[in-house]
Image (cartoon, rainbow, N blue to C red; front, side, top):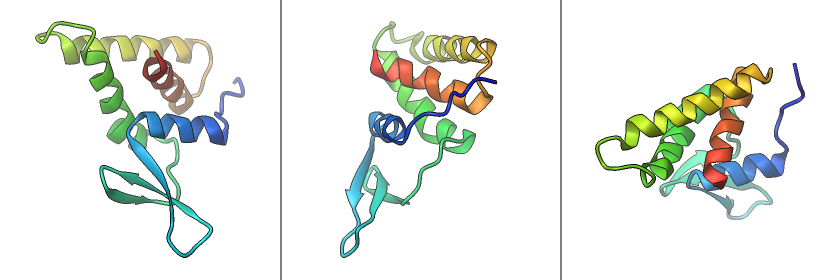
Length: 108
C-alpha cells in the first residue's frame, strides 16, 4: 500500500471545505471543530463515519450545480464513486481513497 495519509494541514483544509469551522476554545490553548454552529469536538478523524456523515453530502452539494435538477444527486454520486474506485485501484486504503476523491472534487 502507498503512503496516502494526508498531512494535518490537508485534513484541516478538507474539513473547512466541507463547512466546518476551526475555532479557538475560550480560556485555553486548544481549538475545536464546529459544524453548523454545533460543537463537534477537538478532533475530527478521517474515518468512514465522518466522511459519509459530513464530507460526502458536502461534495454532492458542490457537484449538484453541474447538472440539471433531475440528475443532480445521482450524477454527483456517480462521479464521486468513480473517483473513489480510481483511488482504490491506485492502491489507496479505502478511507484514504474516499478522502482524496472528495478533496479533489471540493477543490475543483
